Image (cartoon, rainbow, N blue to C red; front, side, top):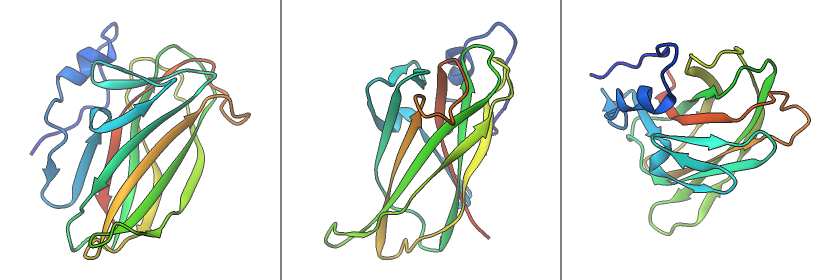
Length: 176
């Protein structure tokens, strides 16, 4: 079982930290699944840098994760983001997450809810933040595949961090 360190040494880069955790894309005892950004398709102005995606301060960056088949006993899930800011800045990061469920047999859309909000910046460039952005989202993994689209809307009025941010990935956990 892998462990995740949520801090990194002062002076190290996100790439240094990411290199320590190359195997986080594996399932942990059927209770959690980590989706690194490299597993998704990144749309400009977000850019892939080493093991993380950089989202510009003023732009809207998007990462699309393809269809994912979750374990059959997951009736609902939580979604956490692992992110950090690339320079010191107080404020909030505005995000949105779209969760699309498609029928396995036909590929037709079953549901397509979207949620959005903000996470508070710790004003530190030495910490990978883990913030829960979705709680107990109902799914039907027996009949459906799940697709995720994550967006940072840096130009949104509620996004008050004045620096670029880095996304390391999404952590999906089975809701009890």
